[in-house]
Image (cartoon, rainbow, N blue to C red; front, side, top):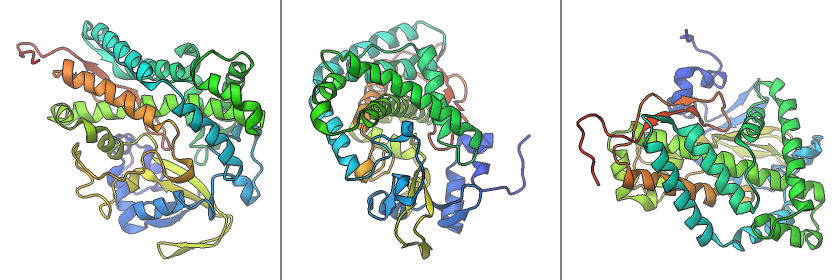
Length: 396
């Protein structure tokens, strides 16, 4: 039975009812304490869009590299995700150049065919788990195709990836930290094998050809490729799951997606983004929201709260698939904006577009079940069917 008395505002987010919909809890935090100190996290917590945006875009005063605040960071954690300029610049440019060099048309054509074939097979079943049988396999195939390497087995990769995600909440549950560091190291070792024997095409081929002249340390390069694999997979699979849940549990939303595909995915990201929180460390005294943050203070950004801030978004609790402009923070901003955002957006648009076009009777069979993660929000299971109800006419 769930507690009814007031509890810690952050730990309360993992109660099943709040985990299903954390946005009313975020609203209470924004209204009562938009900038507050959380003792267990040992961190300032920000909930407003303007404050979160200010931190994300100011790498001079807010660091992703905690070594700038005197922290000792394990080698498996040094990557494009955690370094700051100028170290960050070389590895980010190397990866961005690799992203731009890929033949995206061919990749996307292959993606579209693969999605159509998989949906046709799933449509023959009475129902299926959208997470394990659609979102996760499609995301892993797409990301590894972009990298130019074979997809690892889901049975090996998914548990390790989830261990890394669990470790993102180690500020609340410290016992999750060491397993996550070990899982990152194993994935980085796996990625290092790509550099030793690179493929002929794809992002890995591009990076391997230019690694020596890039000036990027091998450890950072290996860790960054691991990050591209892991973050690309998790961002894409969780976004697809969250977005599908929103569409299939909101009356009329699947039809509305067909009417506004250009803006719909952005709104689905804002409405229920996979990245709900991010962290920085303050490296110069700064005032935010009337509070002075001191150098050395950790800062937690509740991006999920920022994306529902009524000071930035009209009617933020409503799913408006034609919303524009849509300055959400679902994939961050600034130097550390998600490298794989475009892949996740394209994958989600392709799958949901195919659902809306070819399976307009798609519907939820059971309520979506969420994983017990706060930093990276996603589904554990979501049973759906692509078949019409008995006696329901199949629309084109």
